Amino acid sequence: MGAAYFYHLTRQPLEDTLPLLLGKARQAGWRVAVRGMSQARMEWLDEKLWQGADDGFLAHGLASAPHAEDQPILLTTQTDLPNGAVCLMAVDGAAVTPQEVTALSRVCILFDGNDDAALDEARRQWKALTDAGCAAQYWSEESGRWEMKAERLPPSP
Image 1: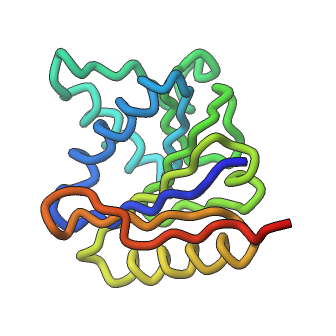
Image 2: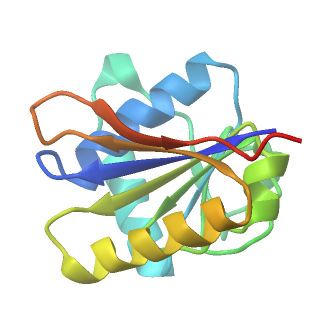
């Protein structure tokens, strides 16, 4: 059973934080899907990932490109995960279901703490997922380093 990790971005933008989390997921041996709300935003993230440091190269591709199923990191707007991902990273308010949280090893929800609409959506997602019995952690970088600020464990059987 997996858990949802909420990352409240206040100091670093998505394009700086996402590669760090993707690197950790790949170090764990996980195939990853990054789910967003628009194809244009996924193409923008694709470009940012290609511009990353040479020593931190993250093999990835877009779901709209050939051989999507072969990508260790897949950028998508779809709900299906054709690359066999066991980790889902949702950005820009992309939907995550309780079934995905329990089926996958990890779900990460990254949201911009400087955007009121993004904060509201993250709060809605936290409530929906924890009310459905999903384990969840809330992480903040407000102090300058990542700290877990809240945790919900699933109800005991």
